Image 1 (cartoon, rainbow, N blue to C red):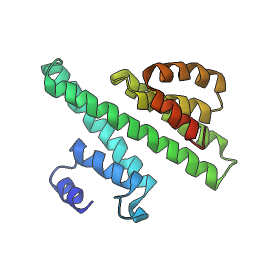
Image 2: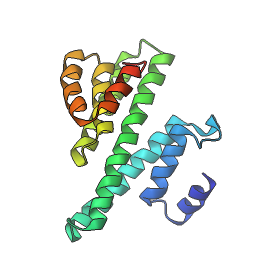
Image 3: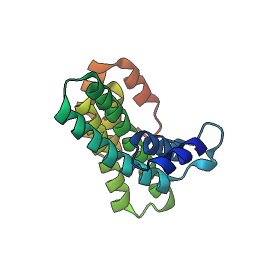
Length: 169
C-alpha cells in the first residue's frame, strides 16, 4: 500500500494505482485484514472506472485494434469483476448489519450483476458468468439463475463446482 500511496502523490489519475489500492482495500494485502476498508475500496474503484474508461476511449480513437487496446480491454474486464465482487461484499456486509435494509442490499446485488455482465460483454469468461449466476441468486431470481447456469456449464465445469460449493448459493 505504501508504494501505491507514493505513486499516487505523483499521479492521482493513474488507473493502475487506483485499481491496486482498491483491491488492497477490498481484499487486504495477504498479510493482514487490517487494511480492508470498503469505503476506501469503493472510492478507488470509482476512480479506476473513470480513469480506465478515459484511457480506453483514448486508445480506441487512436488504434482500436492495437495490442495495447486489447490488453487494456482485458484489464478492464478483470477490473469489472473486482468491482462486481466489491458490490457482492457490500451487499453481504449490509445484510449482516441490518437485514431490514433490503433496498440497499438489493441495490448492491444489482450493481454486482451490472458489473459482472459488463465484464462478460467486454471479454467473456467463466468467472464473469459465475458472478452473473451468483448475482441472480442473491437477488432471489432463481429462474434466471438456472437459465444462466447453462451458459456457465457450456463455458467451464469448474465454475459449476465452484457454484455448488458456494455457501451463498
